[in-house]
Image 1: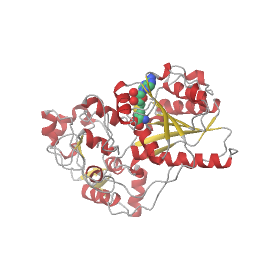
Image 2: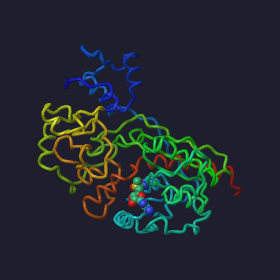
Image 3: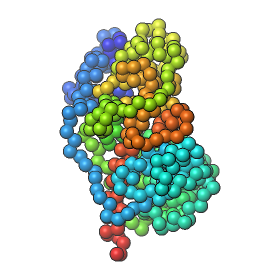
Image 4: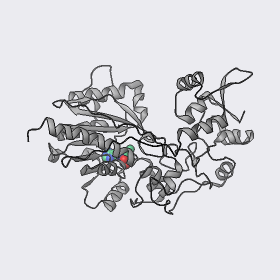
Length: 412
Ligand SMILES: C[S@@+](CC[C@H](N)C(=O)[O-])C[C@H]1O[C@@H](n2cnc3c(N)ncnc32)[C@H](O)[C@@H]1O
């Protein structure tokens, strides 16, 4: 069976739903074959790999551009700033970060090291009062960690979220009163507490005077990022403003690992050398047997069982386990620690995790952005970040919105 992939494995690898694959099968876009005994739809591995090659074709011309020039200097307050992935993306788009808050001392050191002029407010957000920025900031952004609040099926007010970091995000928005507030989060927020956490957040933003635009999950691969990462974006528009916010248009061209690590359109040199983590001996032996774009299913059956332990018998494709990335595909989502069990993303040619600088490139950080702290701290900061290019594209949407706002609604 190792030359075939199940429907769910194929769906996971291609990043499409099973329904889409069934439709594609009918339409002849990607044909499945029937497994003779069970009659289940399965896919020839070679067909899927060829298809991925076409999907991520490097020669594809991209005609989409979201670029727009800011007509004024627009100010951003970035909360939960981490090592600055979103902040640099917004800066690249043309926005000005007037202040950033972050609790982690190494992430703060990173921010200060690279941008000595940024006002980095180090410490727990709960300890800061932001009223000095009232009406002085156009956008408040922040990737608040996701926590549930007790939701009893009624409309929630700000006080119902007390004790959570979303409460702090909303409290700052209330203090600062920006035209826009933008939260970023993981896709899991959609289903967190059966959708009630997100519903509660929308209700709270409504209570403090913000209409929430329909929530979207943006795929980083559509925004010049060589990685299959997704970010949920929550946009609130102050209620006195009647202007649409438009999410950035997805690009057609998808970049691959080779675009991240080798000289090309994304970077004008090969990735610089840097330190990196190593796999323990046993993991290295196992991963040595996995080819590029392969994963645990490429191992001999006895090793599959030994390596996967109990997971071997559980359902689902688990295509991220013992995974070696290929040069001609985007990387799978990077995590905060590169040798973590069950989410291995091995280098295509060498049996090792990506180095720190390779990690940073896959997240589209510039090569001159230095990270502070131990190697583990550096991986964590990079793995936590919003990819810089995705941040830039969201930044263009913010600028478009603010240009219209200042042109139409504000008396000069
Ligand atoms: C998902 S990361 C943000 C990544 C960042 N937007 C970027 O693009 O690099 C969330 C950040 O929130 C920070 N954080 C968590 N609790 C906090 C608190 N109480 N006050 C301030 N920052 C906090 C974490 O240290 C972490 O860096």
